[in-house]
Image 1 (cartoon, each protein chain N blue to C red):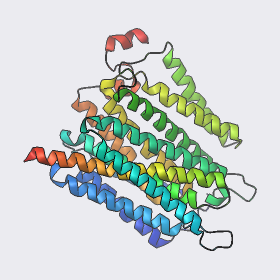
Image 2 (image 1 turned 90 degrees about the vertical axis):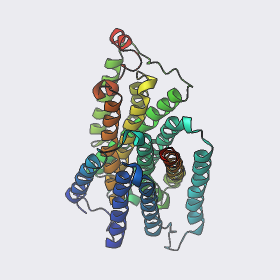
Image 3 (image 1 turned 120 degrees about the horizontal axis):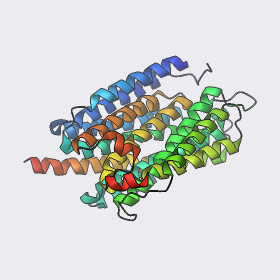
Image 4 (image 1 turned 120 degrees about the vertical axis):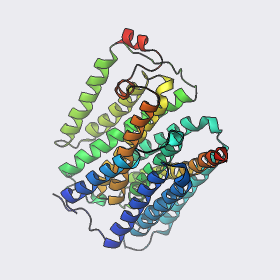
Length: 300
Length: 93
């Protein structure tokens, strides 16, 4: 196994605390009495994770001095996001909540893709490649999974948003032979991720990315508008897995703990939501039973 | 840390995630989903690491773009959850 960058025990401890705060946030949101406190725990946990990372990963120039321009850029990036996020959250109508959550998911998916691409383009800076620039095999698998899941989360969430927002018909769209297309695309993604361990050429990496964007789109279009909340929750789970996969790549415990937490709780939440709506979990995820089950039967 | 330690942490976190949400009240499904979404923007940690990494401008800008996206999600996600919960509280009274 390759050595990841040395880990400072205080950093690991801070990430652990933020992980525990996230657990308490999820737990708090399970009952009305503790829900607001839960939301606050989440904010504190996120603040700890972000501040810790800002301190440990201060941009430095080649001579080791602090790179003030780069620091300003990072802070500006956070600030821009904060303004957009807060304004959107304040202005949005309460009835538009599901599509807003879907839109937010697509950002997490795209961010995961961007992080994976950044790691792929500059592997030595992340300590995941040898001196010759050959990326370690484990890292290639983690990176491949991260970008695939991230891309699926992005394009899937965009479709979910368009359907919930009414920009796209809420009725299921059935492509002829969609099962064959989906299976072939999935098989191609898995095959290419496997091939990526042998050959780290750009075409393999970008083809995986492109096919994953495509499958996210294909998997969500046959699902009807009524089932979208469950789909959004499922995509939420995916965004967690994407973060966890990137956490493995970067050897970062905050991303691994939190990603796994979001991934598994999101999956359970979508199962619970299905049960509350009297829908079969498998049929929602398999797609096509959305608005009209007879349409699905005819389409397949 | 070696792979197996990291993997152990990952698996245990999966189990915690599995058990923690089972008892959620149906009325809180959407806020819980929204807070889970906000928490998933922990990807910002990776984005910050990428934007601080030296050596490749493209990689740095990808990192910065990811920081903006994740930051929208953090602030927007927690704020929206807060709004939903405030509404819920009024209904309760």
